[in-house]
Length: 346
Length: 291
Image 1 (cartoon, helix red, strand yellow):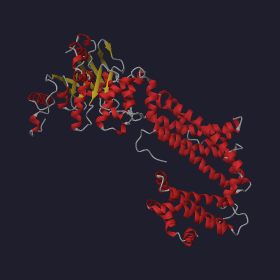
Image 2: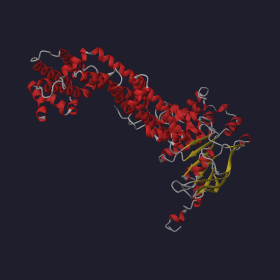
Image 3: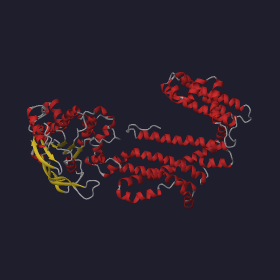
Image 4: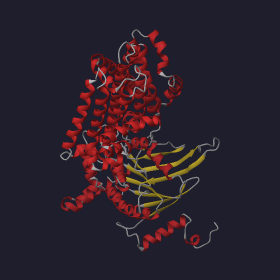
């Protein structure tokens, strides 16, 4: 069965007569990225194939996703415009070389998805809608989705910023002072590994509002990795950096803020990334059990009404939302840690 | 050579003993320095030479104030050393530049730490020119070669105008050619770039009195090294240390005119003498491997 599924897009590709470029796009993107004509044509061709698939499938259906038409035409148009402007902008050329193949593959994947769902109806319907249906739900319910995204963002930011601030302070204290480490480390070791979501029952009892308790839970989830990695970074500061600083008359504040903290920065950023991941998880769980807003709430609410198109729409938005925040944090890190060599790119 | 005014900032180490707990082995303390005494005049460049583990670095750390002796005392002028301070700079074999700061900010670090960056900002430019790092102000340390990184470390240590500069094998990690060039540069810094430059560029303003003043303002330098040639080439006196426990076995004055010729007869004679003290003289090299 899976074999049959995998062959399908290739048959569709063959039928459209653009086999070479598209197949390469699926099989060996790196190879095609080198040669010019392929780079130019990959995205428009893929969009054309997806349009053809959508045309054949949707003509038998009443509720034809017109937004999906629009979307695919925009992609096709963007691909053609890119191909037309290709010779003039070297930045664009660079990007097209890198991204055309993966974009084309993503579009073909949408086509494959449509074939499997509304085309061949291989998957049970309410649970697995077609991409066109998901796009319809996303646009029809855009007001509530936007509102949910906004609430999630606010909640996440409150919790994350609070967790980072507290985590940095406690991490620096534990990492720098051996007496604080003596008392603080056991607390950190025992309380920290408990997943923040396990505190939900308690948080509901203690806190005046679910919004406050959810933000606090996110902060708790962020606090642990940030504290742990900050503390280890600070306490592992090379002794010779501190010695050198002492010999030019540095006081303790200089040693902490100008030597130990910068030296711990690479570690601190690992903590920030882990904290961000933990905050996403805690956010979605907190929203689906307590708070009455946000994307997590939206997903469980839509699921309650069996509107799976909306569930997937929210998931798509979450993917973009969380991934953008990760990218943002990577950008911040690239700026702060510009002095490091061999830094990992996102 | 030593003026009366400068005498007040001479360095004295009196019967200093220091022992350590070797890691892992709880009971026994290992004696690193056994009742060391020495005296270094202001503006003098003294080399300390000896085999590994003879306590050279320990001695420097004590003088820097990073460690405290078990007994004995270390004084500069009439002041006893009780902790690290900006008047005693330290440069290690590893330049230990702060990798998160650019070259300029590394050199500034000493001024920032003392909170005087604002009034001494023009010093930074002077020191960058002095060590020839003018074009690298905004480079980060990982872009620098070993020699350049060590120049930054020297400028960073010197910007506070320390009375004493402690050099713990500063050139040990450099290749032979860079090393010889850097020896001249360190000597140039020791003599004070200002004086040399003034003599070269505007000799008419340099009076006898001014020269003496500059000389008295020379930074005292203590150079720990493994390299006998380096010690002879650079220093006024060489102290030979013996290991376990560390002692100063002998002090040898180097009375050769600078710039010194590494292949002159006097140079080579001195070299042979030091090798003798370190028990690496000719006879053991000629096949007699019993000790």
